[in-house]
Image (cartoon, rainbow, N blue to C red; front, side, top):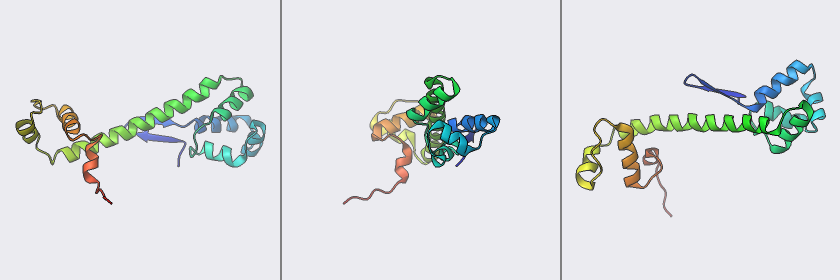
Amino acid sequence: MSNYIEYQNKIAFHPGYYIKEIIDESGLTQQDFAHRLDTTPKNLSLLIRGEQRLSIDIAIKLSKMLGTSVNYWLNLQNEYDTLIAEFKSEKDAEEERQIYSYLNYSYFKDYYGLPDLPKKINEQIKEVRKFLGISSLTLLKKKRHHC
């Protein structure tokens, strides 16, 4: 995994990206930095590689060690999480539009009273989702196994 993710001209930087920069600029090894931070080298390595979320505990330790605020570090994690969720939502929306291309909105409009929404694909998708009672049209691709 990487400590940053690119998607459609946007980059989400994991807090580990910034921690790696600080370590590199300090001249310390990751092991020395981990000991000064009072964490394990493995934990720090996972964090730097973006394979682990920044915990409140580590955010507090970083703020004390570097003279920053705890919120600075927690905000970095929150911004990263938000962007990753947006990337996933955008990918899901693309997949939903592809699935929707197989449906006929007129059928739903004519037989089930969905509103007339000419050329408003995203609104039509929203109405079909609501009518079917599902969170995403991508669910239509998944096979359901009943006991």
